[in-house]
Every structure is written in C-alpha cells, then in structure tokens.
Amino acid sequence: MSVSDVMPSVPAGNFQLQSAGADSGNDARHDEALLERVVTDGPVAAIWRTQRGLVVPRSYLRYEGFDAACREFAARGWPVTVRQTGGGIVPQGPGILNLSLAYPVQGPPMRHSEPGYLLICGILAEALQTLGITAFPAAVQGSFCDGRYNLAVRRNNDIVKIVGTAQTWRRWPGQADVHLGLVHALVLLDVDTAEVTQMANVFEQAIGSPQRYEPKKVVSAAELVGSSSLLQSRFEEALSVAVSNTGV
Image 1 (cartoon, helix red, strand yellow):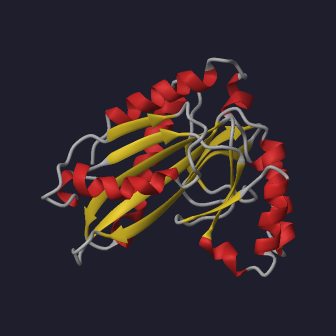
Image 2 (cartoon, rainbow, N blue to C red):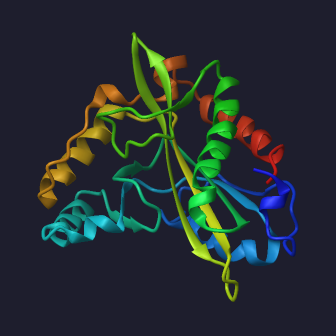
C-alpha cells in the first residue's frame, strides 16, 4: 500500500502503536474506537487482549435463537459480542492476541480490501517467523471464521489456521470518496484450540445454524513451538517491532 493511497491531508507514515496486550479488560470491540482516532492522528494500530467470550458479526442477528443463546452463554462465562467487522464466529480470551490497523484510503473500499489483508498478514508473518513459525495466507476449510486471508501453517502434511482476519470500512466524515479502514487479526498463541472450537460449535447449534468446525483445522503457536511463560511476551515484542516498521 503506497502513500499515494492515503488522503493527502492526513499525515502518512508509520502506524502510531497502542500496545494494550497486557490488559485483558478491553472490550471485544475495543479496536473500533481506532477509527475515530484516524481522523485526527493518521494511521494507528493496537495490540490488545480481551476477556473470554465469543465474538460474532452482525449477520448472526438473523437467527431466531440468537438472543436466547447469548443469555445461555453469558451465564456459562462465555459472553457474546457483536462486532462490526465481517467473517464468522471467533473466540477471545487468554492465550489469544489481537492486532488492529486503522487508516484512511482514497477511493472505494473494494479497491483496498485485498491490500489491507495482505498488509496485516505480512506484519503477522514477520512476527511469527521470529518464533520459527512460517505462516502464509490461505483458506482453511473447516476452521472457524474461514477466509482467503487466514494465516496458515503446514502441520503433519495438512494446512491449518493460526491467525484469522476481518475488516470493516466507513466513510470519512464529510468526504464522499475517502474511507477509514479497520483491519483486524486474531492470533492463536497459547489457547486450547479444541475447547474454543467446541464452544463455537455449541453456539452455532444453539442458534440453529448448521455450520460446524473441526478442531484439527486450527493450531496455536504453543502447539508448534512449545508453551512457555515467555511465548506471549516474545511474540508481542516481535509484533510491536513489525508494526512500528510498517507504514501506509
């Protein structure tokens, strides 16, 4: 993505990074506030965590059983949050790290959708490589929130997902052809992938959706390199460096 793609009146350059990785008190829609900051501050990014729960796009509101399922899961300690970005259901909580990028572009969002995904995938692939993990964009059929711009790895002669991505766009206030983009990624660092996949499946069943996911189609970084007390801090540090060296 080149500087010429950014609105000229907005300072272009590196992302201003907000690191909130150690704060699990963030709301699951924490990053949506970044879009407001772009108007005054230019490109911004956040590394953050949130409490345990499930996050779904607005399309899930169409299910008749949605409200009842949300009450049930909140009582079970898995509150459900509706987000603005697209995609499908995703887990949040301990062992999961989020990266969000927000920035302005000139022209229709459709023109910037793929570059946005490639931008965030490149940053995350660079950070994962510091752990010895080689990741690449790929669809992984059977994983939750599947898409062409997951980050995947090869494991036991199969391709499995380690990062999920999504994005949303809104018009710059008062500008007809300038848009603000929010590109988000969720990294499975040190989380029980079988448990979170099961919870996603149980929720899909509860709302009356036929969609189901396979635990073997996702993997955490800890499963690949071994769990340790330093894994998450090492990755967050590498991710901070990768973001700081990236501009739009």
